[in-house]
Image (tube, rainbow, N blue to C red; front, side, top):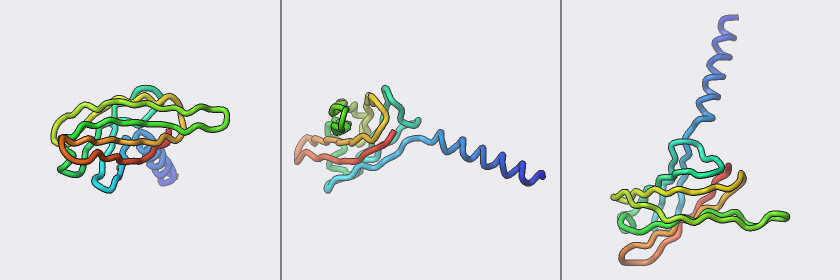
Length: 126
C-alpha cells in the first residue's frame, strides 16, 4: 500500500511540473535559426518572449515579429505585429498580444545593417 501511495504522489508531482514548463521553440530560415523562449507558458493576452539569433551576421539586426491566425469560417484573420528591443549580442525581447487560443503562425523578420532581410518561421498552439 505504501508503494502505491508513493507512486501516486510521484506521478502527481511530475504532472504538475510538466504543466508549468516554460515555452521554447525554434524558428528557422535558410540563413539562420532563432530560438524563442518565455519564462512562463504562453497564455492569451500579453506575453514577453525572448529571442536569440543563431547566426553572427544577424546579431546586430533589427527584429520585428508578426503573429497571425488565418481566417476560418465564422472568424476573421487576426494578427499582432511588434518591434523587438535589442538586448545586444543577438538577443532580443518583445511583448506579443495573443488575442485567443488556437494555432498561431510566427514570422520573425531580421533586417541587418548590411545584407539581405531574412524571415524565420514557426508556429505555436495555445
